[in-house]
Image (cartoon, rainbow, N blue to C red; front, top):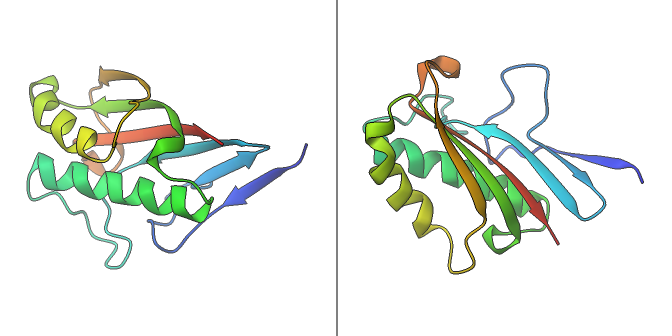
Length: 126
């Protein structure tokens, strides 16, 4: 079964040797997204809620490019540099799902690319 590379201009271009997502059969593997605005290329990080919303919009754009939406998401990983911001991230994150939340883990890390506060990766399936 061949893999299909998913890249869209509606999400930030990769900042390294990777793709935004890979579709293999009915499974989609989305690389971690940060709060970069795909139009300006600037971080949208006025506060943690704004930053998380941009991350989720970037993920949504990649899901759309693969012909999926948040109802297809089966697993997420949230990376935070400060677990004290978990409640705010969780509130924004949860607002993108209508029902049937995916499996998830949230971990605190010492640093993330471009020194952002949050990064989220996803797996989805049809």
